[in-house]
Length: 337
Image (cartoon, rainbow, N blue to C red; front, side, top):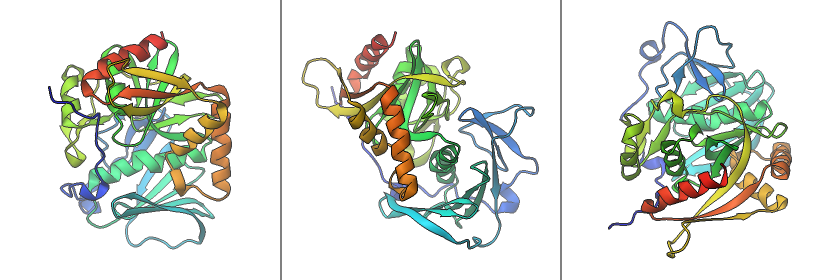
């Protein structure tokens, strides 16, 4: 039997450019569209297939606007600059009005009004789906940070004991593990971005769309159809309603996922971290990473330390064999019954 690693990372530079954003006159809706995300409502002028439609009576938490013309210059302080993929960089600035995030590939985003208003200056010819991934990932993470949350790079499900999160670098298998748990009765909280409160130690439901490589995606046909998305990943945008966690949930545990070779023993092993080690691990998996420097870097440390003091965090050693993921999921479910 062929053994697959849970996943290998691919770079943003390899993403297809087959969904270029059309002219604003064609892409913008005459009516604002409303979607649920991170326990709130995002109002946008164009469709987000990754999100579920919100009721018209629900209060708006984020308003996305698309600006025409050149980016309006604004004075500010550079907080950080980082390579987000092979040759693709991002910058984060704090300005008099709020925050400005600049991506090489999708454009510039101003996050203002205490994180509740997002103004996007699209880069000409950018990939539409990549732009949505940037918005639902780092841009909304920045909004959540401005509202006092700690956004982490991870996936999460809800189990009887509470929310269980999996933090890891791309390609480590956290989405596959989360979907396996969902197929066994857990509820999906979020994929890719996990927002935890450093004051209530609860997690907000995030984006209920999961992107998987083909070898993993085939395991979850019973959870609904999927579409071909970025870099040939399959996107599950329409999971059953009863498979979703749509309310805030106390965090039972956080796991730093570490794939290891299968040694013939237990497929999943965990070691409890001390609070200092957990703080460092949480900082390592901050969704905004090295982009948040200066005074904000100190704030990130403070929030991570608060979470590490109250939420159990473990190193989770798991077999890299895709065939082992069922055993791993059963073990984790047993820990949190």
